[in-house]
Image (cartoon, rainbow, N blue to C red):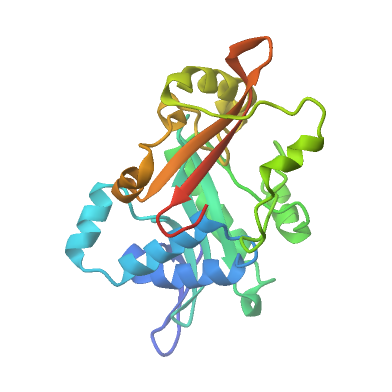
Length: 269
């Protein structure tokens, strides 16, 4: 698929082109923040901060970031109108089967309903056809316009997530609330020695062919080990991961349910 880029009388580019990270990263961050402000979680906000930081960085830091694969959303396409970035489709690799995630399909309101999103998506799918085996994406269930576009491009629904949100300003519910429950579950903090049991549970409930641990993160043993405990571990890595679980009543060596809690140095959980 190709889209013609037009040159105006003022020699200002208009049309589709691949992302140029050093030129586009800050503008893409602005567009993502505008388009997805209501749904951005802590991880999404962190990515936007990284993009803006890198957009102001010099060549040496860019080289280091490239070598460590630390630059987010480097691949994809943008739509330019009179030199201004007004649309974006990003591409990121999955962790298995040479698949690609299509993310941040966004166009500013003033430029919607012109076929821009479709042309960017077609370019992204053509790129995936040459470099991978499949493309996948997320879309809100009530976003009828986007779902119509993706249906017309051959995407099929695989599974639905329910997102639960809780304000950080709410007080934590005290543990004694469980006192009114008959036979409350035995909730324990898991240690590194229980990583195998946790992995067994994860592969049964979140197999890689169904997306893995969350949004296309493959289920790996290494990701199911708690971080080094205490403030030292938090300072060294910037975050600390804990796992809590409910042992099986008839077999304490097996886990019936588990929860992952990540604490970050900036106070977010």
